[in-house]
Length: 204
Length: 204
DNA sequence: ATACTAAACGGACCACGGTCCGCTTTCTAT
DNA sequence: ATAGAAAGCGGACCGTGGTCCGTTTAGTAT
Image (cartoon, rainbow over all chains, first blue to last red; front, top):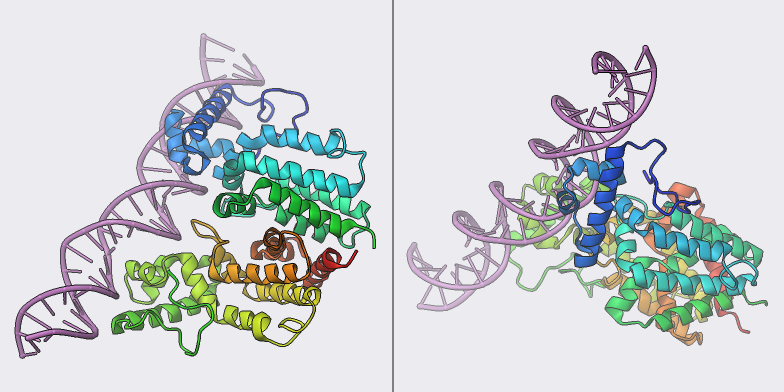
């Protein structure tokens, strides 16, 4: 369903499956282009698949053939910035990347994630509201695994479940809701995350 | 939108607004009855508003007039057990109710909530997936305030935001997903919650 | 009883995500 | 160049949540 690997190996232009037909490539390009325009102009929330198909001069079926679902489209739209963020915490410099102690890396991860969400909130929300399962999605799984690893390194019992709990605190919908509806400042969010993680991991 | 107060003052039967017309009352009864049957038989997920209207011999408009939305209907269906749970943590015996130290109350709250979610998962999920904002809903707000209070009592900085983070860890969709998709046992969930809260609140 | 009013009703209607399937286009093998 | 196969295409179609508005009905005032 997702033709673009989460972490592109080399290419600067997203590639489809090997030997993608030329018309398919052309249409994907048109669709992505139209989608970006629509998102820029009206926001991700109000993008409808019909409108997109229409704007791209393409049949509706084609849109779904390309992206599988509205959520899939949004993920594709996100994949560039998401990959960048992923590179940051996997290969980048400490404290976000490897080299710092787990607690510091976790704090940095949360802060990075919160700002990432605040920048891409609409897309993330739209990407996470499909018929099903905003959880079992490549980017989310990767982030979860990252946190799980750090927690294990820090000696937390049941890192898998704990990672889920921490991920929940970074849920895009929640963060956006806190900021937009309740007027919570980003700083309060990152500070609170920092306190949470620090208290959770501090030695007895 | 929600005619049934979260914590009924006296009546054993849900009441509408004062001076509700008799036909309205009759229809609500019919609808609730039909809804419970449909949920029992086919599960909350597959309940459609058309089917409900049809089964209750009522126009579709009436369903929406009564409950506002599908989510509203689900909340009404939940309100009894939800009220019971609420009474538990507000007025019940410790450690869930008042009288125990905050950390213990929080642990108890989470455990209670997790089991509550596991019993009413489908309804809760359905209640939380509306057009908007599964957050700003009476029951959720109340739970948040409860956690916030306990956190403040325990001396946590920014209890409001921290309460949000902890609430997130108890999100029905996430819990149900962990259990149903990943086969996590309830015990692992409650243990992890307990560890989270204990570590978070333990003295330095 | 009658007339009046506001609430409630019902179902046609809409928007949107998603599916289906007969037709068209591209690629490949010859 | 040509033919056959497979991938792609498009838009009619469907299910579902939610809205609208002309009609009906319960309560009330006389």
